[in-house]
Length: 348
Image 1 (spheres, rainbow, N blue to C red):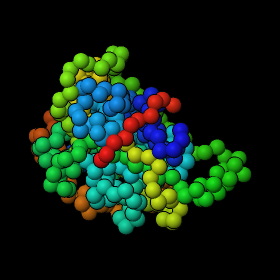
Image 2: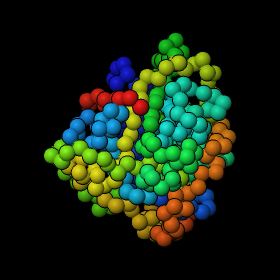
Image 3: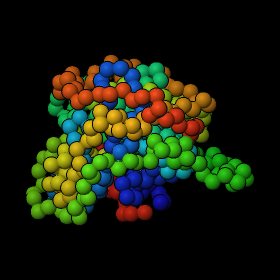
């Protein structure tokens, strides 16, 4: 992959600078209490906007990027397993930074830090809302005010997820590569650190997707989705140990990730959406794993002030009636230290 090209490999987004991002289906946490890391239950399918010019809204074509299907109140996390070189990755939810809570910026900032550092950060499950904790990413429609974007900015304009990658400065990257070669080390991505948590587990009853086919339907407005805040889990967002001068001043690549409802996914792509989310109580009763992760050499960022007061989506959508069963001690697994066609980008 060269230049500023973003590509899809299977259901993995590849951004310049060796950054790999997968969007993982997972169990939605209760909105009270603090919980362990939920598992990955397979990846969300990802498709290029430019492959469906007749069925996506005109404004989506202008923004470019990719789309993926999510159910109402479905949870997700971002996996960075497979990222191969040091990189800074900005993550936006409706163009609000998920790390700092500040408005989306095209520059890296340190105070407050507005990016995660790869491969040190193997995943991100939610917004940086507490000390050593995050609030889970949960899908909600635009228009209710329940998204992080709506609560922080007072408006719901963008929705979706925004990603922007920054590599090391050319000279710093050359020294890093030479150090790796001299020490006989292959580039260390997050895949080695993530272990089983970063390996998707197929969701029960997953239905095979139908072959992609652009529908004949005329383009119209789609039901856009954004990310709100769900339950709280133990997860640190790590402070960058490098000096600011180590990073490139300009991003190497960016991509806009549009979130759509399953009916809209079928209408736009002609594909069957994934099955409905897994029953979390049944998952726990079956003795399947949950996870803890700790990196003793890393330092947690302070919670982002604009994100500490973000309210859970249940305040808009009502109580969560799905049954909950706390995992037993034996179900919690500690984890160790840590080509395709190009995606067209537009103006956003």
